[in-house]
Length: 103
Image (cartoon, rainbow, N blue to C red; front, side):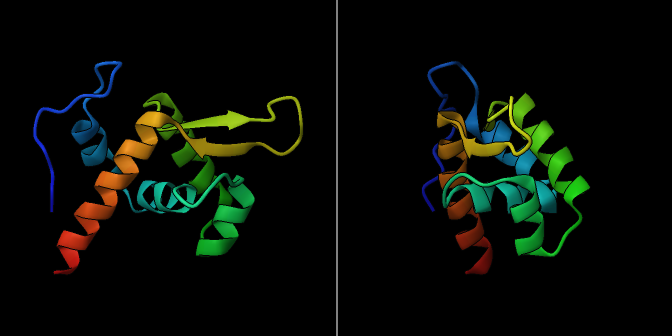
């Protein structure tokens, strides 16, 4: 597991702080893992993981506040979410973290 301490994204956000935040919630973990495969919408994420869409929507809002995800299609009925650059960095760290949990 290659977790480098004190690394920051170009905007000064510490990806490890964000990782710790994500690991604290099963829903945030599922959302980041799902979006690491590509853009998705709240309904599809909820159906894929058999969880209520309100949990997904809340998690997406929390992740957007931390610049992990961004929304597209705000003028349409269906919003698509994707990982930001910071979110992609954190998703990689999450994969490494989860691999370490399973060892």
